[in-house]
Image (cartoon, rainbow, N blue to C red; front, side, top):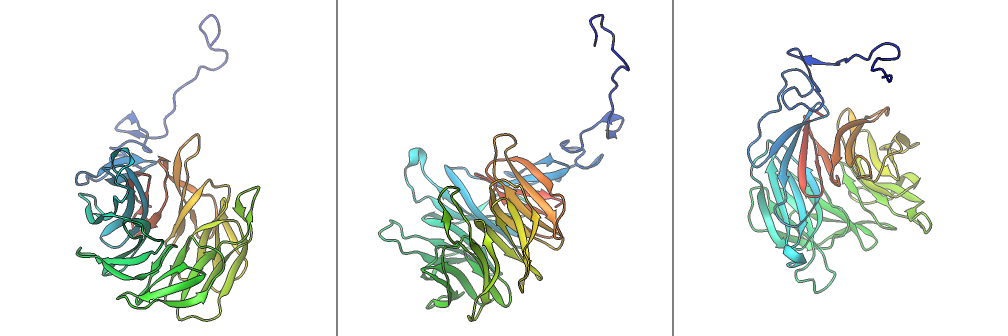
Length: 357
């Protein structure tokens, strides 16, 4: 625009990518035209809420009503389950931790356990929820594997032990502690060592034949990263462990499907065949990777908050390619899960769901 009020060259004109009923519409964020004209996100039961996010329907399934933070989530065919570490007003009553659930379609949450001292690790099968707890009050460093029926009831102590993440299959619960990969029957009993391990593990997974985990190795003092971590597996009945990948950078989260193992390492999302081979980088240049999930077509993960856009939820095809942003401006996103239709994750104080994936 020149000093005399006229344009130098062609005058600018407005363009519109999408018009709905003759009105220029942002179908990425419009609640009544979400992803397409006339597409309205379904109403969800209170206190859950919904909004349009990048052309998909984003549901806040549950929000903490007390001080604290959500630690980890898992999903089955009916509900999202989570552990939360809470404190009373002013930092009092430190044992306010809880195990809760909310229906996949939203609504009022149900709390199974409250006023406990829960470490945050959680798993679920067709009948029960499993988690790790410390004694309350904390008289020693002993931890316990706990479970409660999905229908609710009195929690059961399965055994002592459990510091890492936990995993469950048709017969046993698995965890890593004290230099060993351990398991115990889902009905409780005496824990058994599956195999000796070295280092520390933040993630563990199990399928019909093997248990998979990440081994923390040597820490580089300057970068504060571990530089020679490994991804391992061993038969569920024990035996000689197999190194699937070595030289990894601080692997934090690990999942498996029918063909491959997937994990986060440094700023990358990685995979390797179940029988081993050359690791493949599916995505790189990510920020504060914290959790990973997989389905039949894609790998999903959460990126931690940065100074500009907040945390994000991402996905990439199983074969690699350009990552897709599914959600932005998330407050400390972490633990993530998927089912046939949706992706779920936790923020610092909320349980989120996004549809379609």
